[in-house]
Image (cartoon, rainbow over all chains, first blue to last red; front, side, top):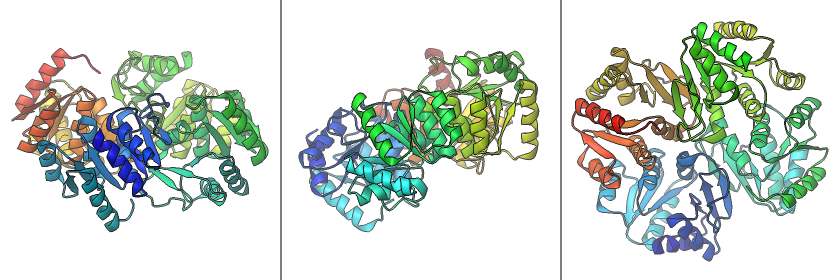
Length: 147
Length: 147
Length: 147
Length: 147
């Protein structure tokens, strides 16, 4: 969570918009709160049919009622994807990001997720701190056009 | 188109965020340009898998790759829906808005669309100018919580 | 409901597959039961994340968890669309069918829906009995390739 | 491909319905052809807006126009998920299957995918032949209700 908060802060300080899954839990919420603490703009792509369960730190809710199918939208609407922590939902997003040819950064991944995803695509990189993740993001943005 | 541009302007002047289908054509584009002319914030929910065909007046593109299924998101993410002109795509959005219990305003509708949609739901109202549409929107926002 | 049951029967007797929204209510359920009574095959495109609320007369459930966005799939996966009754959900499907260039038959429509939808597209026809709807369907299938 | 064809055959012989992504390539096509060779029923959940690119061995096409978001439907509509080969698309489906609490079988997985996915969930098992995959599927079906 500390990492996610700091990541949100640094994303806002870089002048970028933060897009998350929008819910009031875990990494999504921490990153959104970090971005707001630094005066940034936050978007939340919600899986539900209303705002119930939304993070209070989301400025712009996109209400999809698509359940997990909204994970695809999270990826397509992002220029760079940073995975902070790992679980089944995040794994689906990293895989969809590779499929959609987005650049992906795994922040402090476990050995097995790094081995698996870096083996799937050379677009996946790892970072051992939010600061390094931001530096990598800047490099990715410098050399790609927006989707 | 004149109506759509003016509508976008007035939405921005009211301090609201404009959400459209995001494409560089017709009413979506005109309304987005109007909102930008008045210094507003614009969101575009794109049906495509990238920004090709996006209105230059969209600040925040949500890239869905959902085709017409993205119409549902346009409605769910909006607090009030204003239909400006009528065609099959707009008709599907008005119908989905009624289904999702959103308030709907038809701006200068034809006789047949007004008869059909007002017959489907008492949440549908008509307006004969952008100014009236904005007044109605303000009333709807005063008496409903955000979805 | 009587019409919907008979329609399902006749669809099955014609050797066609019946596709509905799959829920255990109203026209969807009646048509599916009719098709099963005549030995047909039935598909149900469910809006939910499991089979709760599914019609017992659905052979093949497609579980989407997409809410109303699944209406688009109902249309795209059908060669001919028959609307039996009218409400906001059905209206969204008829509109999406026109948008997706599917042939649409309105069975015993009200004056206002007939006027509105026939005005939107020449692909929309009306029928005053299930028998006539089936004849029209056969004609549509004869002159179009599957989508 | 040999494995996928045999898997399709055995699924049909067991009396089950085969559901794939429906396209005329790779594992989807081979499994569908295997199932048809054994007289089974095949469903294809297509990412596109028409049948272009569909496997000729698909009996029932569900046309979604959802792009990769249709991967969620593949999973939700399946009682057991068998992954045959590994790439970004398949990885997203395995992850979504874990998220949706479906039972997952990895057929002849690489060391890294087995380590990663078995680490994510105890619902993931591996099989070193189509025959073993079918035995595991039967066990899963015996002890779970359909979704």
